[in-house]
Image (cartoon, rainbow over all chains, first blue to last red):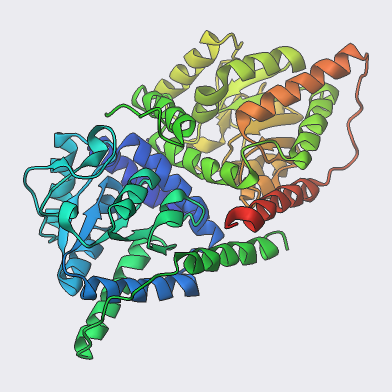
Length: 246
Length: 246
């Protein structure tokens, strides 16, 4: 593998890609996870590689919802752990919630590896027996009955659309972090955050801390307008496209 | 690695991703190539997963330019070989041009593996000593002096922006195939084809065959308007976005 020249205009993006590639070789990130990351990169480029105003609103709402929840759980996969282990530890601390590892390409070995990456960064990972709590074929329905299985709010970055829909179908409030506003994950989530995960999680954590410091105990909203956040992201992309060929 | 359920709405996309992952494990595709594929997937989704009208125009123009060239070369990397080896063989036949392997993450081992994948599909791959013909740092400047080094027209799918710019700077006519119309590759190419590679190459080959069958011997155009093709792609994306949240 050749070195990445610092002179390359996309140096930062290439370095992140290389880090994920190393995690893939170590078995933390799946091969398919690398491709998913690429899709995210494309959409991040299109939203301007910064948090759109609507995404910041979604992140602040997510913080209120996490604090209002009875049993909030962060559902973490390989890509999220590889990209944002420190940010997950910080959010767990700020929102006081459980962290459970959930993989699309699930093997016990990968569960252990992802758990180790998180633990290394200071995350307290809930472990224990899993059952098919989520109505999905194969291993994708597995989770801990006393974790995601009984959560009222699940924050699940970089989730598959199928599973997001199934979690919503179980009556849970599902907060997603995904850069594609047109993905079924974003379209079916209760609160779709269209932002890059290492920008989104710190914003949620900061709002949790602000609310706590202000002594606020948020109430759970009676309803949500996920489409508002999707529209904000689509508008950000349209804005980028308008000036793209100037 | 779990099986991909056929019931998944993105089954085809997941299967292609799995194929590329297998090629990555075999050392044909680089880990970073998987991420690049993901970026392409995102833009393909946005252009509607079909050839936009402007892309078809670009493909027909590319065919004329390949037939008008004195020394046309197809420059092929790991991803292109993994996705479209049969289509490359067919285009080489239709356009009667040389094929040279060129890798961003270049090692002799990967050059041999990519060459083997192409040869297996019936491509005649030009091999031999390389020199730093292209003014770029590291191994990315290497190519065959009597191949890409002396080509007047280079068709290079899924190319890095840096190298595309360097090839254009050498006075070559550079035809790219890339799904991102905002990428520097597309912006600096002489003829940017904004289409998926397994759709683009057969369209170019078909037009080569049509021109030959009609007895046409195209002349090299005096100038090119690459931006016209970029605008066509951006319009296609805007169209998708307009209806995305209906």
